[in-house]
Length: 207
Image (tube, rainbow, N blue to C red; front, top):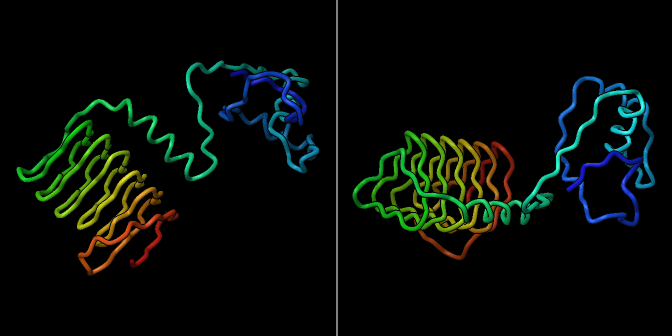
C-alpha cells in the first residue's frame, strides 16, 4: 500500500494502493497546515499538507505495508479487527487461575490478574494485567480486556473492554465496545437477552 503525497484524494482511484492513515510528523507540519485550503470535499486534506512539505524541501518518506489492512472507522470494524488479531493469539498465563475456573482454547492472562472460581473463559480471549475476573462469570470468544478491569456476575462475548472498567451487572453483553473506567452495574443476577453497548470513557450505566 503506497502512501503517496498528492494534492487531495481523487474522485476516481488511479491505482489499487491505499493510504492507510498512519503518519509521523515533526513541528514543520504546523506551518504546512496553515498554507492549505479545503479540498473539493470541504475538508483540509492531510495529503495537501504533505505536498506542501515536499515543495518546501522537507524530508518525506513512505513505507509500504504488506499483509492485511482493515479500516477501523466504525465500531463493527474495530470488532472485526479484534477478531483478526485474536485468531493469532498464543495462550499464556502470567496471573493466577483458581481451581474451579475453566480456561479453554487460546487464552492470554496478564501479570497480576486473578481468575476467580466459577468462571469460564473460552478463547480466543486476551486479558490484561491486574484484572479480577469472576466469580460467576463467562468470557466468550473474541473478547479483549484491558488492564485493571473487574468483571463479575456477567456473560461477555465478542467485546472490547478498555482499562479500568467495572462490570457487575448480571446480564449478557455481546458485540460491544466498552471505554476506559466504564461502570456497568446491576443488583440482579439474571442473564437475559444480550445487550449491545458502545460506551465512552468513564461512563456509568445500570441495566
